[in-house]
Image (cartoon, rainbow, N blue to C red; front, side, top):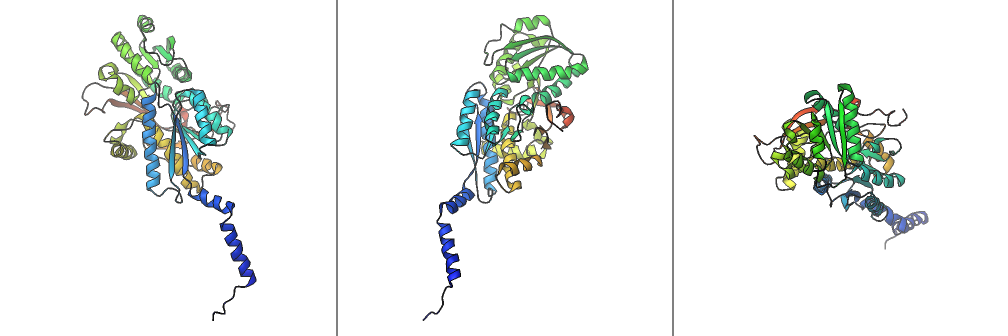
Length: 411
């Protein structure tokens, strides 16, 4: 006969533990510890920026897969919830709100428009959800639009136009005409070039603005041709950039004028062709050709090639990778998905994931990073992807950014 007896105190402890294990509270804790880490990813999968957005999604999936293959975070896997914002601020706000309230995402990464990302940021900051933007904007860094939950992995127009402008004005002249997409991206780029141009005595001959999604530039180009600028800067993006470069070449503007653009897109060059883009100069946050000198670029390219049949990542694709990877790394470093602690981990991050050293500036969470200056080529290409020469690199430095005080941030 077994004489073993459980004491009354011990019995109360065991009964209490059993009750706790079966309670909804205990179940919710257990479920939270195994739920995926959800990252909302609103980007314009349809519309004039669709090629760039698809590159962002593909590269972002690599960051998620890499995180999960390494075991995730305490057994929790990451999940990317992609939504089409249709390049529309209202649609982006709706999709972001659904991601937060219905899908219960932990973080939001994405966007591909200066105006649309501000709409996403308004939703996320009101709900205290971290948003890491992967599109160019000056305004998102300004105190009036920024919040502690706002991070900016992409370059901003002041950085990009400043770097490209300093190269252009030193090498190609000071009489400049702009053909500008009439929305925030175009306006901010022109301002960045004009700010950089003050030191060189640059003269703006014209700033001709066109609607987003313009297919026919024939009404604008004769006026520019008549001005005979040293440099024509196309402050537009996506299909607008492809169409304007091709038509400017057809008009013969290259015979007297250097054509440039703040962001020389890999996807635009592939779509527009070697001849139309030959000699066009512009900036980029990333070009796959960095792999010859930057080990992290080589590693990222190899992952992308393996995942997508030997293809190489685009510039905006790399931002999708970096934007997601930084957030997931910060989760690991913080030991939690709690927003305030992840913010602190992001602010402390010193990283080199795909292009060289980067970090987030404390006052506005702008990623301090290099700017590449590229020139498109049509000869001596090793393969179909060998489309640019890197002619200069402006190294990372806070001196290339607007100051925290200028942005309205207190010291």
